[in-house]
Image (cartoon, rainbow, N blue to C red; front, side, top):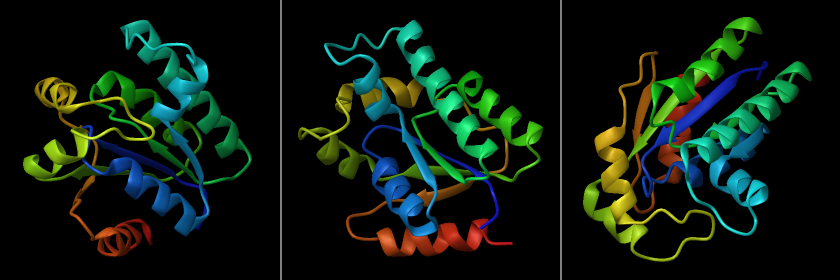
Length: 167
């Protein structure tokens, strides 16, 4: 695959990180995850303030840019719930004349409730956070592909994704 930028967005518990990790491995892309980066930047405690969120996204953008300059495809995994958080990534793809692919990962609300009701390794977001971000999520203003995460359908999601990003 030629250099490309792939954004994986969606609400907490949707399965976006599980999908993004598998996709990045399958296509041998660099992978950046907002939750992992947040833990790295704020090891002793996270406030999830607007400033903290912005630093996480700015750092992901810097890492993404550095990898694109090296000719690598990058998968970026975050909620991307606000359009203003997505725009710098759109501009990065345009400036580097590379394709931008956006995946919106969704799941049914009962599955999300089950996923966010148990402790997860990387994310601290619970069902209340899901409900809050669901209200705040702004429409994606670029072409994108919606994938519906289920219990055991990662192979199907990866097949759909590969068809979407293959020329």
